[in-house]
Length: 439
Image (cartoon, one colour):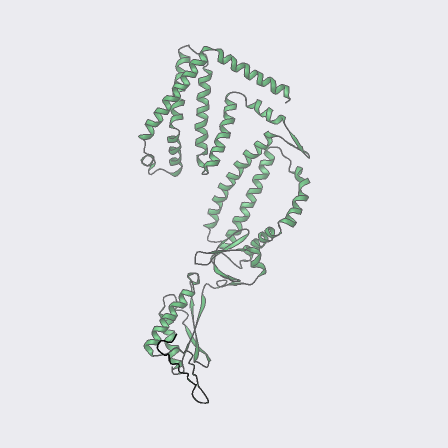
């Protein structure tokens, strides 16, 4: 479409508008529209005060509750549509108007706004709702006044060539709108499939996470390809940029790609999975989530370590629950030589067995490990099946119980005793006498 065609369309629109304005019935319809707007605002305020949304939606499904809430918010627009529609019908039947163009346009625009707000009620992001509603209503308004084709031709008349691709404002708008809709539908579908996958008891947690990640990537790729084909973009037009993208990935995104591939490997080989208790370097805790770039390890004290997936491939990882959820806990203590080692081990085993977290299927054990200068050293071992609940607190409980049991059995914990011997006579003592009044 050339500039002359655009100018001609604008002139036709201007001429049509002037013709409408010069008619006295235009001002009568405008007055009716203003009166209907005022009455609708008053009616909306009156009705909202007497409508309780909680009582109206009690016991209804979630979609119906959302629908009723949106309709309550658009009460004024609904009243405006009814008033303008009734006014137009009355004037046309009375023979005062042939068409009532202004009233029909106002009714159609208001009706389109109600339909758009109902359609966007499924979107939770309010900013996206406003943008989508405004864009959809603009398109609807152009279509109602019969100027949608002219607007499309005007937007398509300006273009920039990017290789074999002709980029126009109309193309960018179509891609943005369709891509937004496609990604929203992709998010809804991926959330539904994720729920179905997580409920499957036949799949391990690592396989579930792997399937969810691959599913999301695949859906996004399919959505982009479908949108490009719908707007008529040949994907081969981007072949010129593939080399630059490859170089960017090779040099600028090395760590990201490495972490992504490492994450896929971890999910496939099941070396770590959500819920495992691991130690990676100085970080210990329970794996709470496995993402594309990192895993989240909850320390149990409010902290979470975000460890890149590559570190789990290249570094030493201690998985306390890799093949067995049961964990061995060791408590070291010592007594003096006056205690009976057999009795000490017996008391220690009784103390450990009495703790509720210690497994009864694997009895605790106590070993005499070393004779030292200060006393005898023992090692108390026992098994637990809830290592994620913490080991330090368990050790503390057992050691406190050992202290009380040793007090009752008169078993003493050794402590170093130092003797100071003076050879060669007594140390000289210097006596200082302070005279009264001496400064």
